[in-house]
Amino acid sequence: MKPKVLIVDDEENILELIAFNVKNAGYETVTASDGKEAYEKFEAEEFDLIILDVMLPYIDGFELLKRIRKKSMVPILMLTAKTEEFDRVLGLELGADDYLIKPFSVRELLARVKAILRRSGEKEEEEDTSKIISKDIVLDLKGYKAFLGEQEVKLTMKEFELLKYLMSHKGRVFTRENLLNNIWGYDYYGDSRTVDVHIRHLRGKIEEHLGENKYIKTIRGVGYKFEEDL
Image 1: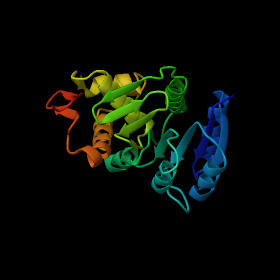
Image 2 (image 1 turned 90 degrees about the vertical axis):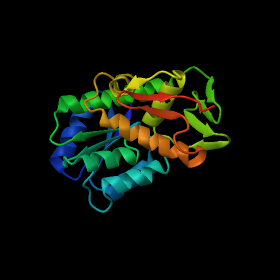
Image 3 (image 1 turned 120 degrees about the vertical axis):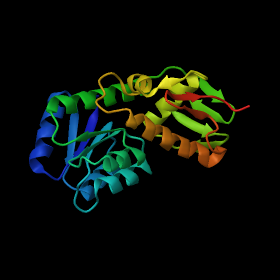
């Protein structure tokens, strides 16, 4: 089956442009022109990716992102005409997997879509049923779930991949560029602040249960590593 993409934008010409090109790239497309319509379609159908504009009528993109994340870890690519770092960081903090600033090229958009869906597909086809365990943290590689003790912690796809990568290389220090290349891929157009945002968000979810900086260590001037406290 073709991956199904929900495209949400209140500008008709942009909505049609994105839908036309995504469909031509081989994906099934569903469109919505406001936040309310988008949420109704999200609840009614299963999607492999959501392309979500920030500025929307009725329910804005950030609020819609929060509502979706309460129910689903479907990959979300945010679109924004704003250039302030705050808006990009907020989207990542709320659980977006990637963002793209308007105006953007169709080529770049499709590269992001293909990269996100490729990684999502790799996750679904993962045959390794083993788990990664580090004291209180358990990663279920088959179910793509994370647990602290008996309690499941809701992670986005990128947060899970980041934690999995760090836990798989305990004690090894990675630069932000290393992590960008290995988690987001060489075709990612973002910058190293993306890594910082995801690390901060990941720490917040873990520290809520386990205490401050117990596992993910910052190596000043270099990057990050996963290390168990004795």
